[in-house]
Length: 104
Image (cartoon, rainbow, N blue to C red; front, side):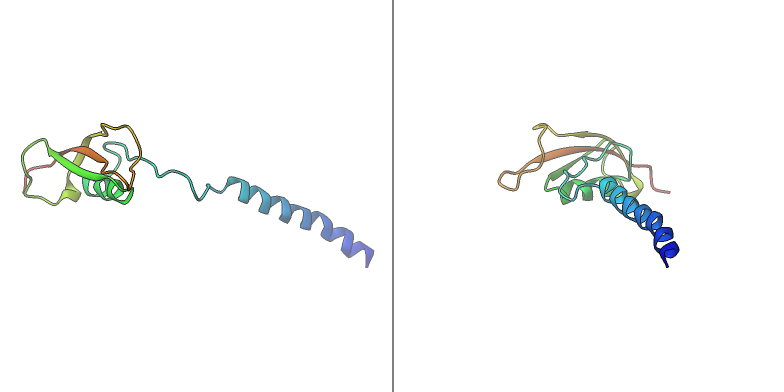
């Protein structure tokens, strides 16, 4: 029996070390939401991300109002004049510059 117990010790040690490493590598749950980057996703996804973070979003149509879905448009720029995170106590507005393709 001592042979089985001593054979299990390295396995147990590796399991504990693996669990500790995965916990250390996990993202912190309370981290700040990531501000989207222009062009990294569709315009509709960018608007939804910003609204989910508590911002009031104003769209600047670079080529007039489109007759295609916002999901087909691209974001050319995001302007946050206050340079701060959204605050529920005040209305934080960001401006999103959007360009859309012509309808087909």
